[in-house]
Image (cartoon, rainbow, N blue to C red; front, side):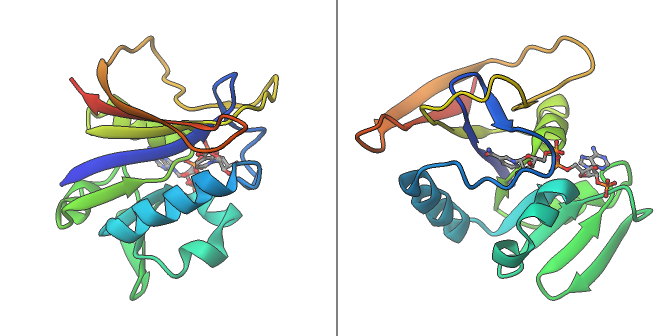
Length: 168
Ligand SMILES: NC(=O)c1ccc[n+]([C@@H]2O[C@H](COP(=O)([O-])OP(=O)(O)OC[C@H]3O[C@@H](n4cnc5c(N)ncnc54)[C@H](OP(=O)(O)O)[C@@H]3O)[C@@H](O)[C@H]2O)c1
């Protein structure tokens, strides 16, 4: 299992204004990159809030949705399984896959960070400021994990910047 987080932030490091905010503010180039990455992944792991903002596009993909609304795990259809990360079901479920795309949001990215499961991060910084909103990560305690910058790419004229980090 290789866990690859894919995220877009503002200049001020926000991934959304609030938990119901659909990610419609990212560039076309970032969206194209995201779809390319998801096509290459064996499964997408997403939190229930993010899933609810993007049910239609995500319903076409093999998804594990994090939620505390199930005790362990529950298959909803061929492509969709609900899983409670507090149960012992989740990790073995994910380990069945080679390439796992972590699609957020904050709570889900943070779960992977805190459990030392993040192998790579693809981070697009969009040239926009929200001034408030949800952070990429939000740990309860101060937390430090080191990554190494593998590559950078400017995606367009306005300066959307794609950064690729590997865990050190
Ligand atoms: N810019 C980006 O790249 C990007 C990417 C993804 C999402 N987003 C944005 O992020 C926002 C949503 O973020 P969010 O932090 O609210 O969360 P989220 O991680 O999408 O969803 C949180 C929900 O997922 C479940 N969950 C997540 N971690 C869990 C854990 N460790 N244990 C149990 N349940 C867990 C819970 O569902 P239940 O309530 O069902 O128990 C929780 O309420 C949306 O606005 C979305 O558009 C932005």
